[in-house]
Amino acid sequence: MELFRRYVAQWTPGAISWKKRASTETSRSTKPTLISMPQEILVMIVAELSGTDVVQLRKTCKLLEELSYNRAAWREIFLNHIHTTLPKPFFLPKPLQECSSKLIEQSLANWEAEWAPTIPTTEHVIHASRDPIGKRQLVATCLLPGGRWLLAGYRDGSVWYFDLDVKGTISPALLIESPYPESLASTNKVRLVFSVDLLSDVAQASPPGSYHLTQFNIAIVASHIRRTVDTVVSVWRVQIALENDSATGLRKVELLSTFHEERFEDVWSCDLYGTTLTYLGRTTGGPTSIIIVDWPDAAGQTDINRVLRRYISSSDSARAFLLPEDRILTVVNYGARESPGEIQLIHWRQDCPVTSTSPSQQTHPLPIVGPKKHGLPLIYLASVTSPAVIADELRFVVPARGHLYGLVIPLSFALGPEEENIRVELLVTGEIKPGQQMRVGYRQMFSMTTLNEREQARA
Image (cartoon, rainbow, N blue to C red; front, top):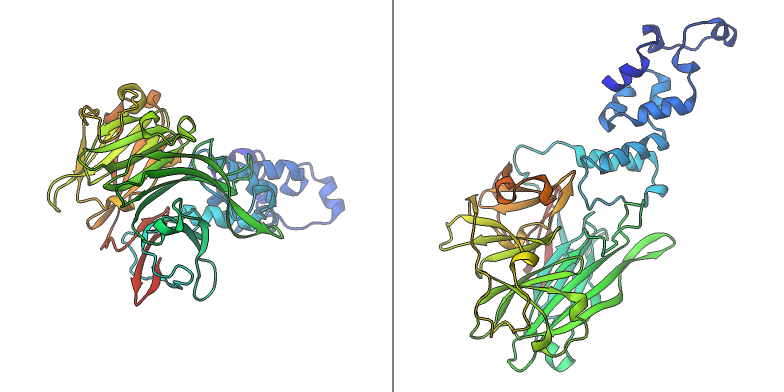
C-alpha cells in the first residue's frame, strides 16, 4: 500500500473515511477528497498496486471498493505481473480483451496463492473410456497449461486428446493419426514420444496481447519395432477448435515438417523449441545419443543419410531440454536406483559439429564433460517439466524421491556465468509416487493408470 499512500499524502486523513455530503458542501470545500479526483486518475493509481493490495482496498471505503473491481485497472495489473511474477507461458481462460475484472482477478489469485508446506493427499479421480482407443497401449502424455487438454500417445503411433472438463466419464478424440499404414500401425509395436512447444515465438501459442492459448506446435517421433521400417519424425501445428467463441476441442491444421530417421532400438524422449528438435535414442549396435535437428531444414527428407544432425553422448536414463540461445539442459540418473541425479548445460550450436552421419554410424559424438550439478536424489525423469520463464529466469519442476525441486537457470548468457548460476530449490516435501505418466504443472500433479481395461486419471 506504500504506492497508494504516496499518491494520497496531500489529502486529509478524513478523505479515506469519506462519507457522502451534500453537493453544496462539497463545492465549498477547499481540501481535495477522493470524490473530487477524476475517475481516470483513481484508476491509474489502483492499476499501479499489486493484486493483493487492490483486494485490501475493499476494506476501506465504498469508493475504493468500487474501484477495486474496475476492469481497466485489473488489465494493467495483469500486464504488470506478466513481466515480473507470472510464468511464461501463462494463459488466461479467455483473450485478455474479453476477460472481466473478476476473471483476471481469479487468474492472478490462483497463481499467487501460497504453496502448501506439504503435498496434499487428496485426489480427484477421472474415469476415461477406452473407446475408441481399444487395445492401444498408452506410452506418452502431456497436460497443457490450464489443465483442460490432455494429450496421449499410443503404441500404434497415434496421438489423441482428452477434455478433462467433461463431466462424468471422458472419451478420447483422435488428434494425429499414425504415420504408418494400417498394416504396421495395427501391430501396436511403435515406440512413440512427443513434445509440445508453447514457449517459442515460432509456436505463436497466443496472439499478441491476448494471453490466451489458441495453438501450439507438437513434434512426434515414431519408431516401429520392425527393423526394415524407418523412424518417422513429424512436426504439426494444432489449434484450439471453437464453436460460438467457446473451445470445443483440438484439431491439427498444418504439417510443418516430416522426415525419416534411422530406426531406433529404443527412443526415450524428445523436446521441441522453435525450429529445433532433439530426441534421445539408441539404434541397433549404436551408442545412446541425444540427436539435435533443425526440422525446417530436414523437411521432406526420406534419405536418412542426408539429414543434418548434431550429437551428444548420453545415458539411457536421461532427458534433454532445449533452451533459448542454443542451449540444451541434460538431466541424468546414473547407476543404481539410489544414485543421485545430475544436470548440465551445453551450448549445442557452438560445441556440437554438424554431420549427416546416421546415428548408428557416428563414432565420436560430443561427450558430456565439464561441470555437473549434483545434490538431487533419484529423479523421476519422465515427469520433469518443460521450462517456464519467470522474469529473467528459466524454471523447471523436478520430481524426485520424496520431494519436488525447483531448477532455476538464467534466461540469457548475459545474465551470469553458465553452470555456476544453476540453482536447485526445495519446493515442497511429501510422498511422491511416480505412478504411470505422472506430469507436474505449475500448481497440480497428474498421473494415469489402467485398471480393468479402463483408463483412470488422478489429479
